[in-house]
Image (tube, rainbow, N blue to C red; front, side):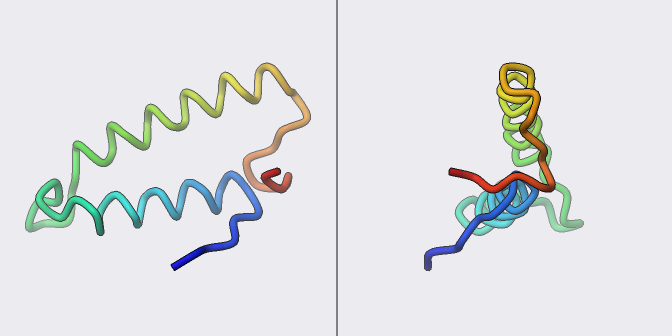
Length: 65
């Protein structure tokens, strides 16, 4: 299923959902997932680097191109 992503926040939410769907073995019975959390943190570090290179990028407002 294709999802139209408009913001970095949309991208974060989609990756959050997709990681848990694609790797249910990473999700503990209580719903926590340290492995997924680690992947998400790495994504945010990457986005922070990109934002530093392009200060006009906003996680919530700018559209992905």
